Length: 101
Image 1 (cartoon, rainbow, N blue to C red):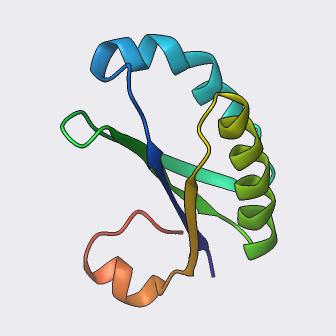
Image 2 (tube, one colour):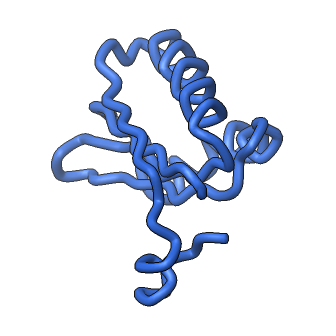
């Protein structure tokens, strides 16, 4: 069973291509996290929000990453970070083409 981590927070920018350039190194470093499988980056310029949907091998890996990432975002001046962890139902997700193992 895999675990999905959903994170979102207020974000004043950058967005789009500028966000890609600004966070390229961070994106590459996430690949090295223990138990990390994949991430989908999210952004909404209109509501000034950003975040991501992550898939981890274990709940502990997802929890550890959420703690680490929250501290990192706090260091960027983002005070309020919303994070939720869910168990993934592989069988139902596979029916709907979900990118799960």
